[in-house]
Length: 57
Image 1 (tube, one colour):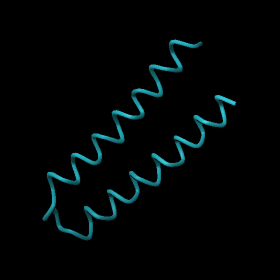
Image 2: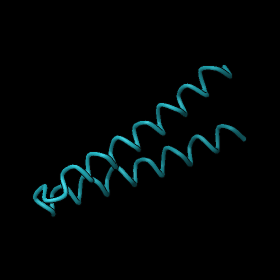
Image 3: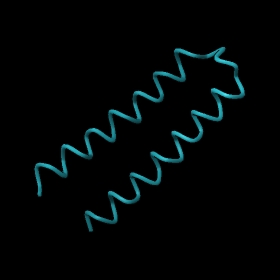
Image 4: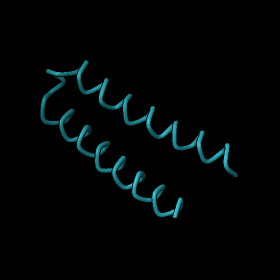
């Protein structure tokens, strides 16, 4: 059950990161701070998943 949830989170994070990269390429960094914030949010969520896994392994 947890494994499936982690896989789903990783797939979603990958989609979000890909979207952020595409926007960076298309926007020519007009919204640089917003895009950076979004990337950092994805990274923080992934860090939370890793911490959770470490605590329960």
